[in-house]
Length: 95
Image (cartoon, rainbow, N blue to C red):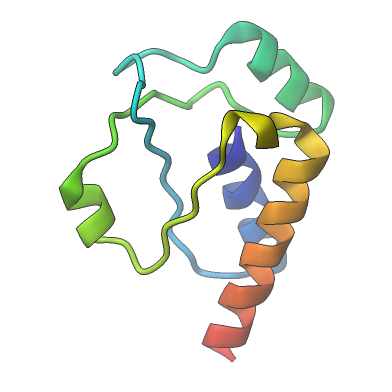
């Protein structure tokens, strides 16, 4: 859900960033879990195109910034707050 939120928030802020998501226990190729997709939709985020991908060394090596969210940080308010902090950082770097 964080990938979907951050991508949309960046687009709305006009920030040209690439956002991707990986999981260390991802069920590769699976869509967003329906209850999570419904929750995202209720907050105005479209998770319909999300596909689970596995974390890899290549994904980390190719990233400018890696953010790790634990299961504890799954509450949407915490994820949105984290996304807002990331966007502030990205905005500062592109200014």
